[in-house]
Image 1 (tube, rainbow, N blue to C red):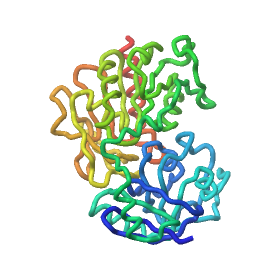
Image 2: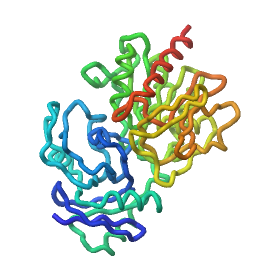
Image 3: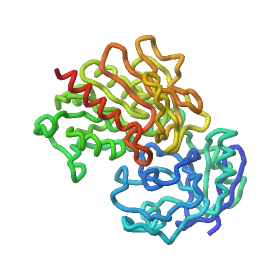
Image 4: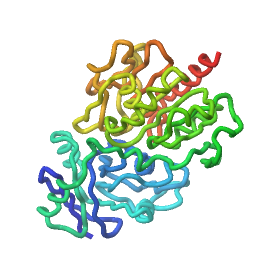
Amino acid sequence: MKALIALEDGRVFHGRSFTGPGETTGEIVFNTSMTGYQEVLTDPSYKGQIVTMTYPLIGNYGVNNEDEESADIHLEGFVVREYQPDYSNFRATSDLRSYLMSRGILGIEQVDTRALARHIRRAGAMKAAMSTQDLDPDSLVDKARRAPGLVGRDLVREVTCRHPYVWLEKGPEYLEDVASLPRDGKYRIAVLDCGLKYNQLRIFRNLGCQPLVFPCSSGPDEIMSCDPDGIFLSNGPGDPSALTGVVSTVKELLGERPVFGICLGHQILSQAFGARTFKLKFGHRGANQPVKDLATGKIDITSQNHGFAVDQESVPDYVQVTHINLNDNTVEGISHNNIPAFSVQYHPENAPGPHDAQYLFDRFVSMMAEFKG
């Protein structure tokens, strides 16, 4: 089935749908990971985006229930060079095509993804429309231009959980009364769900902690009602500058308990400290991004997925920049000088990606132990 991808600057790419008919719009971006497409599909941070995989063969190891990073697929569309229908992996339970079709996600193959990625690198991430139904380039370009972008959009409220839950070995268990939940584990962590990935909760659980997840709309009193030992700010989609309510909540929580933020959580914490954020030209998305720890000089290879970054010039004097991206020198980590609060822009939960930075979870646990005395 013929398909067309039209960018708002007028560039058009041809391909074929491997998931049937459909049409969608979103900001088109690229991811450089060689594996981990199922984790990419189920990462809520991709809400509002059409994702292009630069690795040419996608689908060759199928999908399974264990690699999902949330309860659904959140991206708007999926673009690959060549879809592999014949998967081979002992863990696989289904093929990628069926997986996408069951969620109503349009997948397009036979696209020159190298040319598309190079164009985005030169021109920047931009709005796009892709369709099997409207094959008129001018019409589809117009739809791309009229589509909502990411700047100024609060997409967190579309992916956050609706009710609090505790994460158990078997997964989430929703709660009617948070305050009366029995303690289970060394430390209880109040998790503010801005679009989190399950592996963050799995790691906390493996470290002997009890993750208690709250919707992003939860206020400081509700979060503190569970008497947490620490507060975790998750990743998520959209423009961090649009999250004024969440930033206000975090401001009130600073100093009450140790705080750890990842990706969007890093941008939220930075804004709570008084820093600003800005949109990157084409973002960082992949499992091979080099980050330097300024305290140790060590280089971590990291998994990343973000289109916005913290403006280093706006970071106040009482906040230390702890990590930088070696590709473009953008801020990859911060730490408050006087209160227990730190964050990183990348994804130390390694889903997908390397394990280099998982020590940050141990650092947060140590911070909670020290704070508790």
